[in-house]
Amino acid sequence: MTERQARERGLRVRTSVLPIASSTRGWIHGPGNEGLIKLVEDADRGVLIGATSAGPAGGEVLYGLNVAVHAEIPIDRLKHMIYTYPTFHRTVETALGALR
Picture (tube, rainbow, N blue to C red):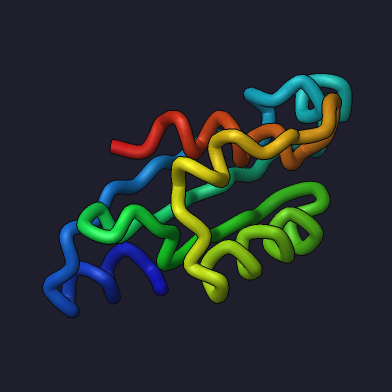
């Protein structure tokens, strides 16, 4: 679900948007590292309800986010997962901490 769709449904949401280049892997990748990860959380339930990933390995990053959305894994549990270093997936860890 997008942020707009969630708000139209009357959900109270928190979001974060981080550039892929902010991750160590994004920095290592160098040119062509443009992209982002955006998370949408249902603030009342504490679960992800939507995510967007665009850029290098964007589809691979989305796989884990799709599992989190469909399984309704709590944000607190996602924050304590091990995010392999250095990967583009590390941006997800940072994005979870930036939800506002």
